Structures are given as C-alpha cells and as structure tokens.
Length: 459
Image 1: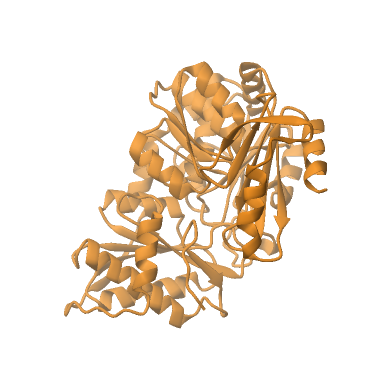
Image 2: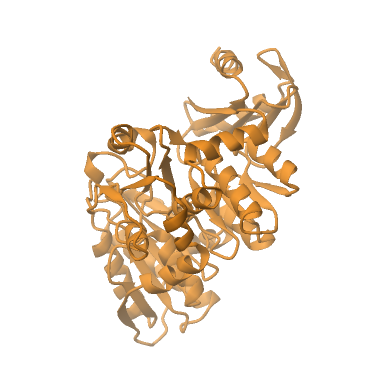
C-alpha cells in the first residue's frame, strides 16, 4: 500500500495497513527527516491516545528512533495531542503522536508535529513520504526516557485560564464532563479538581472501542450527556474527541452549541474581557457570522483553506486572538498553533464567569450582536471515480446562479466557494482528499433557502 499523509498525518486500519512493518517504515522516514533538517541531537517526544495498540506501536517507534541515535522522551501514559504539541514547543523538540483523532475505533495514525508545535505542513509531510524506504545511519545509540508531559501543560493552562473567576463567577451552573472514553480523561477533570471546581462525570475510563460509538464530540455520540443535562437543572456538558484536540459543548437546554458559535463567543470574550489584540483566523468553511463579528469588533478576519494545518500556519504568521475551524478545533494567541479542545472548553467556562451569564444567554447575546442567525449544513456528493472531481468543481465554478439566486463572488482557495447576491448565502464545493466525493457546505439565513439550494443541486 502507498503510505500517504493527509491533513492530519497518516491513518489506517490496525492489522490491515497499520502494521509493525509500515510503522517501522514511517518511523524511519520521520527519523531521517529530523536528522536531515535538525541533526541527531534534536530530541523527539512521543505520545499516544487510548486507541487499540497505540501504546505498543508508539513504543516500537520510540525504540526504532533510539536505535538510530535519537534521545526519545516517551509519555508515561495516555495523553492528548495538545499536551504533546505544547511540549514540542516547551522542550524545543519534534513530536510524534499516535492517534486517529475522531476516526472510527479500528483506525490508528501517526501525526508528526515539528518544534513549532503545530501540524506539519505539506512540504514537511511530502519530504517524510519521500523518505519512506530510504536508509540512514548515524553511528550513535540513543535512549528512551519515560516522561510525564502533563506538568508543563498544566502550568501553561493555569497561566491562561482564570480558574478563580470560574470558581466564583459561575452562578448556579453545574458542569458535566463526558469523558467519552478519550485522552482528555486525567487532564480536563484534573484541571478542574485542582482548583476545587465541582463537576459530575460520565464515561471516565479509556476504552479502545469508545463505548461502541465514535470518539467524536457530536450530538449523536453525546446522547447520554444530553439526557443528563435534560434531566438535571442548570447543567452544561463538555466532551472532547479521542485525542482531545476537538471540543463538544451542550448548553443548559440540552442543545449542541456549534463550533462557529463557540469561536464567536470566545472571540468576543478574549477581545472585550481580557484585552486581546490582533486578527481572527477562520477557514473558508467557517460561518459568515464570524466575518460580521470581526467587522463589528474592528478585527481583521484571515481566511484559510479547510484543515488545521492551514489554520496553524496562519497562526504562526499572524499571531491572531483566536483561530479555529468549523469542525471543532481552535487555539488562541500565546498558546500553540494546534487544536486544543481542553483549552476551548475551559475558555467557555471562563467566558460565562466573566459575563455572569449562562451559555444559553451568551448565545442570545451573540445573536443580538450579529442581528442575524445563520444555518449551516453539509452535503456529500459521491462520484464514480477521482477523475470526475476536477470537472465537477469546474462545472460549479462556471455557474452564474443557483436556485434563482445570482452569484456575485467566487473564491478558489479551497475548491470553489460561491457567494450569493443576498450577502447571507454561500456554498463551498471541495474535494474529500481521501475518496471520490465532494463536500458541499451550504450556509444561509433561512432553512428555506438551504432546502431550495439542496433540491437544485440534487437535480
């Protein structure tokens, strides 16, 4: 099989393509990249999430790299991707994370994180892939040192978050932490406990099968948390995906709060309550609501292609107040150019405490501020083969109107994005990258418009 690095590393099914032989190939390829670009004395740190065999494969990788002469710091326990990424920055090291993030339980992956603590760019992963099958020698013998990476991360989060404000400012609001069998167990809960912030919890153990669901903090996989909130007064719920780089939030009414809303609420909080200055980074699939907020707050909005490797690159370039994507990943100024779902959840608690409002009230404040409510959806259009992808996107790019609405602007930074004449509706058509299908994102200020567009696209 051809080993390919996608938007967030190499992923495959354990026992099929994710095998000891292929892990050895990828480990050596990464080792050669580090050796060629940093030298043999660059420390490599390695971590793993709760997935099946992640500990075994990560230890195999650690031993391979030590045999090539590297000093390898190996996590003493399951840990979140953002914890390892922060330590890459803190220790000036390159990191390798064994995770498949929110993918189904049968998958595992290898994610390379350079010392800038964000996702590897395409140039880096292309070089790693070109190294596969190549040998290199250093003539040295390294070592593997078991390491606790949590201490430095906890200190950094304590510097960012005002836990005392959370403890005293949350008025009659109770917290439910849905561990969701993920890597955030032992991190999000420990940060709250260390400040005597009370919370209830469910699913607080690591399960390689993630409870029979998906390691993704979406409503369909957080139903028990939603039921808990609905059956108790004044509760909000938080969860993270398998490696804790994404977040999921349920408000006091038992409703899922979209990542677009979370980013908007936190942008307002960091700007107005904590005095952060700078721009805001979003992807081309992010809501128009975010552009309106930026405009009203006098904040420049930088738009990137979809994928946090692009967002992370923009973070390193522009040093924004906050940067995020519509799929549930964000980070903030002064932290790391990598998604941190634990930080995102804590920032929501902090925003509520500063404002003295419930999350539902913060959502209403947001709607009042924007003076418009946006609805988002995504449709996947399956194609027969990859050869159809480019012509189909080209067909969309040549359209002048859809569903009786005139197209007034086109953006080609990621597939094709079409803006409509009402200034409140757009569609984005972009390729999947892993299979022959197009992802079609649609946003508008009314469900009727969205339904009309969907019916026209299906004809």
